Length: 197
Length: 197
Image (cartoon, rainbow over all chains, first blue to last red):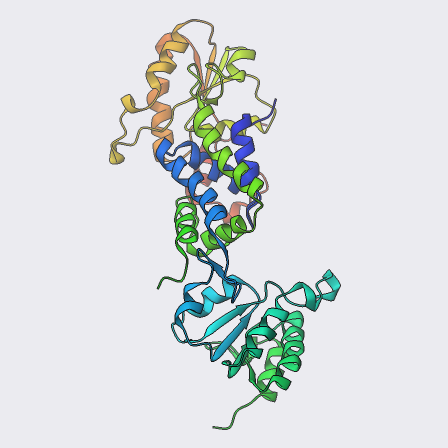
């Protein structure tokens, strides 16, 4: 006999599919659901279905949207395009309230080791947008890891002949960080990319 | 403009109701749902509704069940009853595969500071079970904290006149623990309850 009755075991199994959720956490979540009111549980289930029903990708930038074109593409100047790997990177940048341009979500980075080629991510769509004429600057904001750097370099090479400025987010010691505890690669990069004061 | 579109924001809000889930984790979970297939999402939502539809409390022991009487009460001898605070404590004990008796889930412990009186937990039902005659031993397995201890003592006092043996899980230094790092209360208890070798 199993320790959990079937409906609880099944819900635990569903929760286990969420990132970072192990068996113990799945159990806590399932027990919380058991203790919800009918209405709460229905609201929870409904919001899961709703996300699948309503969320799609902006046909311009590739970010999540409920419309055909997202509200960022709809309302902002397309002179600057910030290129990111995933929708969550847009969230991180939007939180700053500092960037006023639009985005381009690649939905991945070039990663030959895992079979991701330039054709598997939204590079073609980016070139089309830049080719249309209004864009003045493309900011490459992929992660500063091997794949992110390679993808940024690859795209930059394709963009430059189109006559736009291509920039990259700066890399260096994090604000509040200490030299002593900064990894060597970052520290070397901070030295190479030092700025005149 | 909010950083998240409405359906994602709403699902994040639902995930935030789960124990220990903050905004960042809720976002990761919601994005995982966005990336699920229609079928996966439907299975997830359905299992939430199913738990509410199918899970009820065993009318004998108070543990979760799909039937009127749970499979433990149905199949095991009622000579030993192990009294616990919550259904998850049954899970912890069942995992051992060492206990062969039945359970009694109190659904709480006496906690006057938070307004929980003896009438608010399933003590009356326990007395009825013990009064029915087959029970020989009641094992008090509430947590070894202030409320758990007080509840165990309170119930033991009610049970003894009924002619059953009342026992308590032993308390002491955890296996693999070290004297040096054991808190004083536990260490004192281990000394007082020392056993002859």
